[in-house]
Length: 122
Image (cartoon, rainbow, N blue to C red):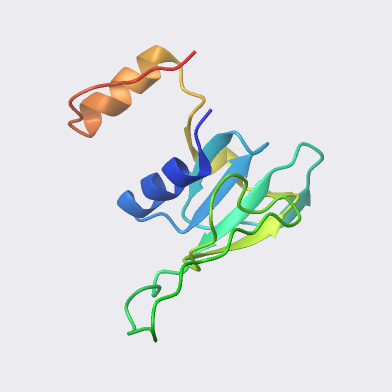
């Protein structure tokens, strides 16, 4: 599994546009989302605002935690992502899945991105 904060950081570093936080444990990155499909396991979609942070903002105030309809579990809504709860993308097969990789897939991913270390949990 991967925390939502870590997933959002991966999305940003890979310039993805959509996160499917599958069953609120696995990080699936997409360039776009097809039709929404209802889910029973708690999946949520996070749409990244690519213009977020580019315009000056008024006085900064700390964001309030939002735990509504399964959005932003264990994290804070910074405003960079919009959330659609209890759904997943119909084109999820095209997602880059992080947090559900085999060790060999994880090692291949590390090699392709020139990482220096792997933490492989559970």
